[in-house]
Image (cartoon, rainbow, N blue to C red):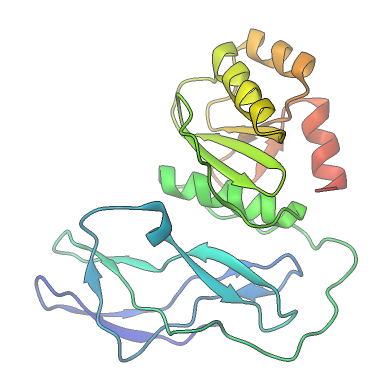
Length: 226
């Protein structure tokens, strides 16, 4: 569990007690970004993908991963970026369990949470170097890992046949596999086309747990990254 730090809003000067959330490492241990108790919080004015993530090393297995940068909403309406200590937390490396631990989801309240939930799930499957995709999809948000392109659709509209085909075509040009995550499910023709093209489909429930929609997703969930 991370320590609580005092965070002062630079706009209204209110002070808050903040504790960074923990996310599950692939080895199953909780990981929290190390907070800087002497740092100064900044207001989030503009968002950029690179600013949304921070590198953190798991103290249990030594693996380094990218996790959401800590943020805190002040009562004055300002979103605060909480300062993180320089360098990743470290400890002597030990062997991670050979079998995957039970997946620990991230509750979805916002579109950003949906992307985080998908990224945490892909990391649990064994994918590495998760980042924002080079090409922006027509709908939703694209994320990528080594050898994989994923699309996360946090809208209330079921993903269409065109959405699935665009993801598949983009992945083909990058010689990568692909997977689709949707909050609202899929149109019937989109599901049929995904089966033909070999695209695993998942629905994200509000607990942040991806639910397989087709047999390809069932297989990916069972075997993980290869």
